[in-house]
Length: 186
Image (cartoon, rainbow, N blue to C red):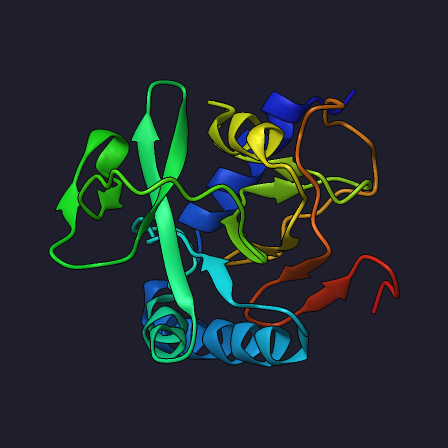
């Protein structure tokens, strides 16, 4: 029987086996996919981006391009969850190797779009992350669910429903080679 933990391991192994020689190509393709997807979102004044770890899909180019037009926020870890802070330099490497902007006293309660890294996605389009539940706890604090884009460096999807009820779901899943819209399944 497929469990969330087993599927996470399968996906992580699949990511680790991806050839490094075409990383630039995959990065370019994922940024193209993300930029197109963001263009289609109507209301997007504030966007939550993540700053990628080494094996996550590198979306830094899109982040830099969007900085000119939109308010960009990134996670700032706090205990078992995080808060949103404005994206600004210098970034510092923190716990789990995550790069963060400095802390801010500004309270940001909502975002229009959330771009979230994923390890795997199940048949309900729910996220399988690293197993810490940080994004789940964070999304539970939001008054309104933002348009959510899941990003993967390589498609790792199961039709089975293996996630828990509290796991966040997406509106669209992007990989370098595939775009899956939850509503249209295209």
